Length: 371
Ligand SMILES: *Cc1c(COP(=O)(O)O)cnc(C)c1O
Image (cartoon, rainbow, N blue to C red; front, side, top):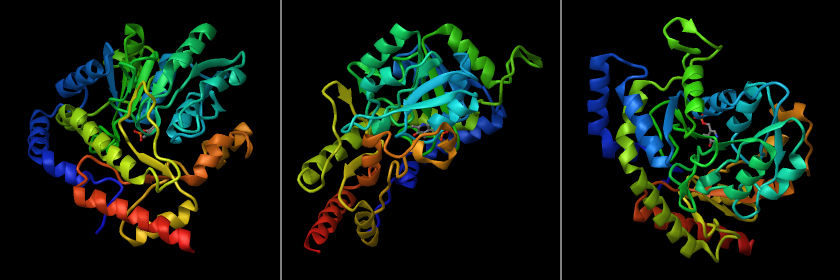
């Protein structure tokens, strides 16, 4: 049996009719940007998050970059974030000319460790980007308190946690701006590039709108240097169709995760942790195993795809060399990078596939033990 890491074709087949009808409708109207579907999706997604405004943009990376620009963050400014995230979080900081400052993560949730904020703070710090990684929220209250007491902006990177909760609040709604990638493999994904910013600050929402559309409110009148960062109408149509399914898809992910938990608790070194205040949405299901690379190889031989999110921490990437970080500076992140592996998880996964993965994981680790 073949089990992919995610199966987007299976999901497409469940919504194909609606998608095709919507594409036809958009094309017949030939309004391809900032049309009614974009506006409706913005409102629906913002309301779902518990934020007042949504601003659809062209990718998650763009969402983060626009959020930083809307907050006036640029050259000379420092932004604190984690080294255990996708490169886009840090690219956005670099793209506005600011400097990323890394902190380590908590060893069990793999998310930002707020105890480290104090030592990362300088007179140039302007913002924190907590990343809700793998589907689990950052412990936000201490981050928000720290930011408030030092006059910092909080821009949430919620690209891996659409719908996840911190206490009763959805991620993305707690900081100044919440940024989501709507890349096709995310919990809510378009069929191309897409992203969205949510905020409850009207002024920030207006600035985001201005920057995403060439700094202009009225055509050919440019108030500021903006960019081309709009969400297109075909992608908005897909997102509108998928949006009503998000809760049930996240629920399906949780059900699979709980079955994995039961079956693998005593098999792998660690299963994912969910804090008492968190509602996890399992963008990935991350376990730790010894000799990870051989383990992955043995699973691949049995047809089971796995991932590593992420194999090389950002502070050790060549692209981050100019910032001067060294191996050993973020021991929790570095240790995790050698042991973590993501198992297949997606709402359309069948019972057969799930049982097959469990069996393959068990046999891969057992064969390891007798060697
Ligand atoms: C996917 C992702 C992004 C970037 O999103 P794109 O839409 O691919 O630009 C940013 N941050 C995190 C944590 C992500 O997982």
